[in-house]
Amino acid sequence: MDQKEVCPLCGGIAVLVEAPNTLRMGDRTVTFTDLFYRCDRCDEGYFNGGMMDDSLRRATAVIRAEDGLLAPDEIVALRKKYGLTQAELERLIGAGAKTVVRWERGTVAQNKTADTLLRVLLDHPGVVAGLKKQNGLVKPGRRPASAAGTRKPKSAAAAAK
Ligand SMILES: [Zn+2]
Image (cartoon, rainbow, N blue to C red; front, side):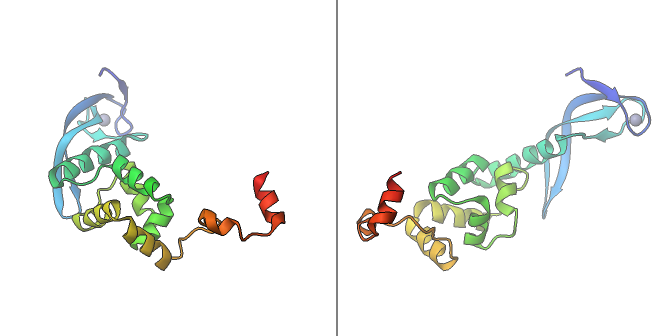
């Protein structure tokens, strides 16, 4: 932990430090151990590069732990279980664009209502199937084996290639 760089604010020496940070997320304030540069001269703390996302991940991890929310990798697993892209899962549950992307990156924590919904989807494939239909997310070309026999020989031969 001896990384140093020139402070972009005053030209002093900034050192990478591990220290408590407080972030306001929605209607709550989260305090957690964070990693950031702090300047010896002007005492300013700041992030650079991807450090801001890492900081958000640490903060949301606290919220997830406090509220018992699904972790990002659990949301990925849920989505893959049903063969959905991030955009498709957003459409399925009526979430805004990039919502699932942010949950999976860990930079935003789903609220409890969304978490409950995700758990319902996880445990009830029938609900997912119904929502897929409702939202036009049923993929073509995934018919049961019995339907394949009704195809013309030409397309069957093409499929066999
Ligand atoms: Zn400085």
